[in-house]
Length: 322
Image (cartoon, rainbow, N blue to C red; front, side, top):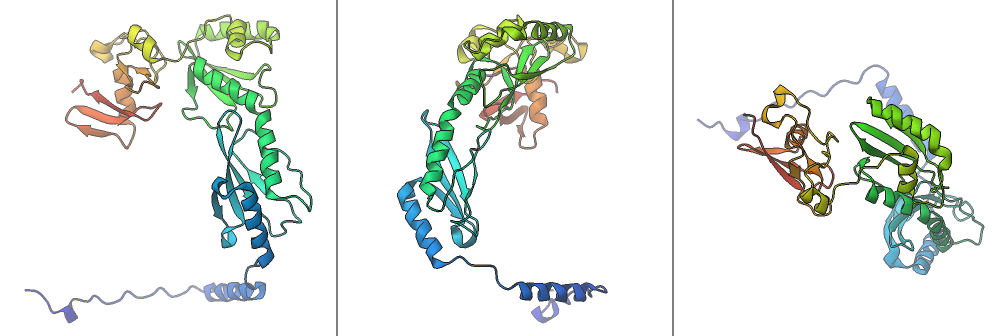
């Protein structure tokens, strides 16, 4: 039997009583806010000036305008001479234009902005573009590393990153930090791993590091100093024709010989990402375990559906151990 509407309403919950001292604190905050008054507002001339300066730069280059009244933080799109797109965030302080603007961008280090009372926002853009020219050699070096060497970290790079972790095979890695001011110089490095091979690589580095030649390409210098052929990243061609590619998860060519792996014991990589620009090779066992550790992975019957750890394209692995 359905009850009348007047009987179905539950009693309103009792409001919690303020604790001792809470009312006094609330009153103190209100008094402080009243004494401080409303937040300071910019004069109308500020907005007309900023609008005119954006017009000089070009409204099509303005990505966003936020902050107080929507004009204190401006983000512009800046394209460098190699076609890379950069977002320059310019924050205008309350004292602007007597006080210089603050800038932020995805670069390894920021330029020191030259500012005077007669300066305008277009001057900031021009100085940032000059700074981008200085960084071209650094980004070309990092692009070379990403293209030629087997980079395992970071999975997704940004323009500000100056480090790369490179796999050398047999669970050995070298963590490099490239000097953004002098990208062709000898980088700082740290070796990672536990194999005897690692000891040999460290000895080679200490012995040959003075042979670093700033006129040579980065990967050529690195291979020469380590006295070791560096593994190349897998590509669509070499993965199809070579089943000895290193796994993108365990970074080993073959799985260990272990009874627990059953039929997979000692096997080479047997799964390749379908994305032609990625084509990372994996052991299906490693990829299966990785997918199971990701909360977004879906399972349908005996197949795991997820994303490639490198390019995020869809991957599907059949479960064969049930």
